[in-house]
Amino acid sequence: MTPVIEALFVFAAQFLYVFLLGLQQLNVVGRHYAAAAATSWCLGVFGYYLTATIAVHSSPDSGSLVWWAFTTAGVAGICFAMWVHPRIERRFKKEVTQCSQSAK
Image 1 (cartoon, rainbow, N blue to C red):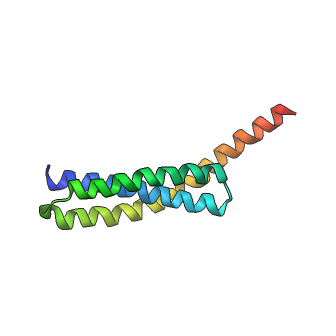
Image 2: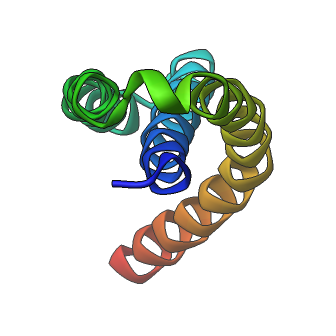
């Protein structure tokens, strides 16, 4: 596997992990219990995958490229989580409101 492909695997895994951490934080602060539980489970899965990805796909040749992919993915992941969370929240609030109004 080439160093670029290794870096892409690491970037993807770290991006998803930090994205989930951001969602988890926002869900906890917002006291969204079900969403916090779901993101917690996903964090376990991606944390396991992230460790395995770095261990398997990191070679001495790709050193600095993998490091840059890992650190850059963290920045991108948290910013994306902050951008997407309010949109997810609005979507689910709209659905909950519609369901509660139709139940009356």
